[in-house]
Image (tube, one colour):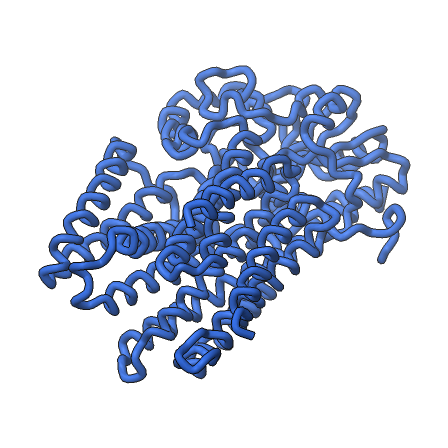
Length: 468
Length: 95
């Protein structure tokens, strides 16, 4: 009995490691998530009911209040997570991440308050854990909320010159203030402490605001690992191994995941953070050539084209997600297949707002897994394809990523749709994609544009194919 | 404790090294839920707060709520994402 808390914490840590491992493989991913959740449950049971005290093991103080708060959090979290649309997943993840950051910051805030007069002779390590938890938690909270706002369209991009420089100054200022706070606080001066919070919050704003929407997944992943580090700070503070392990695990796994995601977009992390895509969009606007003419096509023509094709490849993008068109596109696929047309989906690693976003969406509408083909496997197939149907995707099919070294997305691997015999783009307007640049594909003579909401256009196509 | 940190850094790197890009989003979301372990810290804070210290109790209460949001929301969202990936027996057959 005496070591029950340690045993539960150990089970918790094991659950995290094994769960994360299982989540890395498609077959065991869902179970892995449950294993990690079970680990969390063990850890929570350990902290709540098996506290070591003078009279042996007993429940934690204020247990009623804690249970009430957990109840509220569970209910709200459950409802939010269950109700959210599949398309809004990325911003949801970001929001929950922000909550974790806020939690870490609040812990530091209160621990600081509890220290009271003992601040003067606090060990350096302890101070570091508190202040780092505060700073990182605040940055993660504010940053995630901004990311959430941007992804759900509540906030726009905001840039100003010399941003990187100012951000570095901000970091130095935070470190400096945190240092001065140590001296000031032992004399009872709390000014610097509050200043640290404010600076960290402003840094969170400046850090995320300028980053373009296409890079958002990378930023969320990075903020995710930040929150992990903030949790690990708490682990240091309380000498709690399960917090420490969970936090560090997420910190390191999150960082690696961030780098892997950058690689999938053929960009470096610094490139994303400095905002090469975002930063140069102003320049791209001025040089954006609207040369050539755009050919507008009607649903009827497209339906005929597809019905008598041998092979059709669908390129889904964010537009599909916004329009909730995943079910209609599956219906169209079924119709065409019954006419003997081979239909496949070309999945660009960063199509949509998050890697894997399209897979999740299409899987939701029961599109069979083997029809979703990843970029490197589908690219050679475009040459033998009759019709490519681009549904609400833009930057991932922009040939200037290969041909124009001046383009902000130059070097990003793209889907070679221009090799197909015919290209049809379903799009709401000629507005540029998230990178904010023109797409010369639309001026290609093989390319026809079908304007309108992705779902409505697809519905029209379904109806036309049926009546033909 | 430093040993533990370094060990975990390597475990984290090792775990994520070769994951298909399809799973990036659920994995990020799963990791997101795991750092909800910060909730334990919020419970410690509540444990340390005196019973008549209203300010601390209120802030701690909020801390526990948002921590729980992170944990529950994180795991449920991840589960919903991964639900989509479940294997369908046979080709195009319904489970």
